[in-house]
Length: 95
Image (cartoon, rainbow, N blue to C red; front, side, top):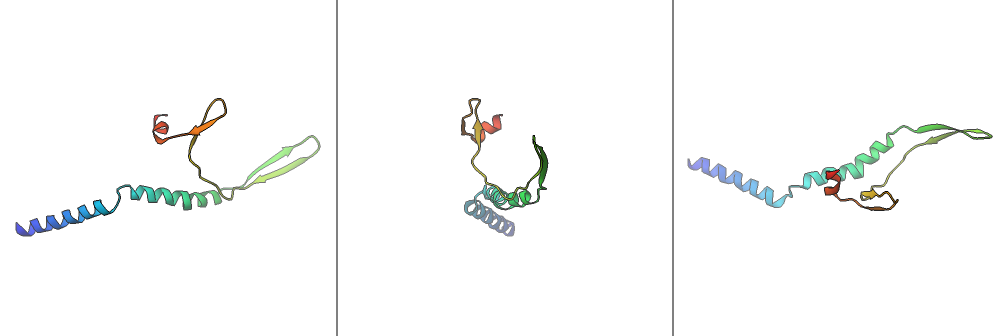
């Protein structure tokens, strides 16, 4: 019995140290940061160019658009009057 108690104390000690030294949200934050700073740029760079034809009154033009980068900004809500305001997670969850 004494050996089992010693093993349990050791396990409890490891778990307690982990909980106290490593934030429980760190994995989620690290994953989000990796997506925003690395994966999002990779996804954008893999998008195919968008091609369209402009038929003007005097000429026709081919237009091509290729995305090469992006910027991530805080979320906002666009109001009916054209203004914008910050949008918070609790508000997004309720919609």
